[in-house]
Length: 87
Image (tube, rainbow, N blue to C red):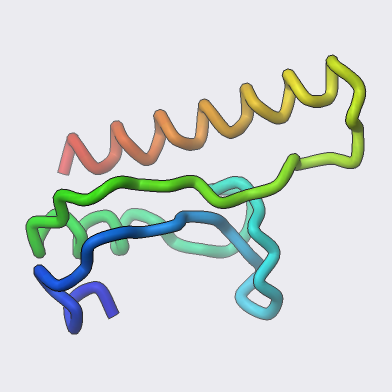
């Protein structure tokens, strides 16, 4: 799809899933193979934002659980950005 849209692709919301349900989980936590997607984006000159669209990775809504979830999201975003930059 990235190659089909090429330069027309302007925005993304990134999340992971099990390829069955639209789970909106943190990237690298399920089944999506991100490296070929990132390569296609780079090859097509994507210059838009990478918007993470995911919920908290656990059901813990206490301070420690929220901070842990945010740290996991930050790590995933950094990993995506590093992979994209190093292609």
